[in-house]
Image 1: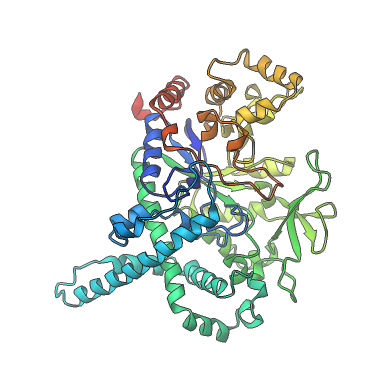
Image 2 (image 1 turned 60 degrees about the vertical axis):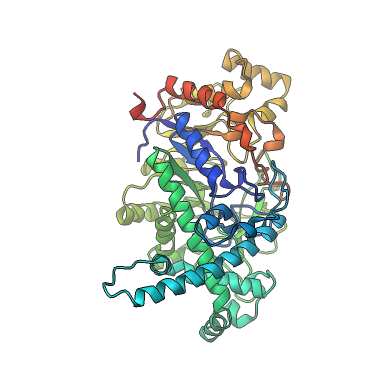
Length: 518
């Protein structure tokens, strides 16, 4: 895959402004698309869109394909006639710069339950009208909903049941449910589906509502030459529908159903004990026996939501670090080879030459680079990593020997550029200034934005925090720090015409604006 020269902004939808305490798919999302289009951007990069659990990390989702219902816009539900004005009165005063996930959940889910009841009433009325429509041409809301449920049944049925049972167990992890349902015995599955039919229907409705709101937003963006760069985390959370419904493709303890082999990375310069993530690693032998069915479905389903896929921890498709259950940290793990070449060959045969970006950061060996290059996947370059003492640093733009890459000032795992620069030593700041020549009057963040946009990399992505000139308080995530992440939001007044024009001028200058701007 070769991507045309373009640029974009990294912003997860939860960081959008909204009166409901969390960014959503309502009016401010459309305004952000307008800002992207007006500044000449062509990409909107988002983090994984799935429903989150403990810690609120989008990289630990209850599903590999479901959407996060907290992103559903109550304003759009009102426009659809599923909520009334009185339902939206008394919304709490949420902080404008942070997401209070617990309060958001307590505020939004009662609204969603009301919308679900209204939806069911409207559905029944539409069905009744259809029964009296002799020409049979009436296509109501129920038809759209049923088409969605049928098309996505391969994951939706299990996901809705998983969430309904989880609610019934007070949020307990699935491996702590009664053994019969934890192990998915057919009689237990049928019994729970019958007992929780209303709750299952509610969770299906939430997915339908998320899907149509997201698709409407994506269509609006695509019509303005804005394309969605999404994210597939290589691993899924142990407490997820994916693991519960597909236990055979993960390394699980046969007795406890807990991970028998856990994912992580070995010790390195940044951590003497490595990182132990806790996700179960894949049983690739079983996946191969199934002809990669689950993974093919995951990619195909993700492309329903995004235009380009970034594979998080791409190196895990070549070899992954596996740690035995019971180990306190990642030091005693081992490398296990993965069938990445076989899988990506089949993926190309089944789905074509897909728009995939490889997150090739961390411990990258020649074998990982060969796998990436075998399929022409663009890799990633991070400018925050560029300014050491080595003139051959691969993140320095003059060392990019291939245009087929994507350059970032920083990612969601980095500090903001202002925060990063403020914490450098005097020597390190001197190195940065020496490479830049000077720091532009608008600040260090605009110097790095200029460096990214002017590079030969086909794609350049800038976190919105850098465009806004924000410090460490706006950092999205600090790896290995379990608390204080994923909360940041920008304010409605932050996206000014001045910022739009400044970004547009640089984008045009460095040849990254859409072709129709010529």
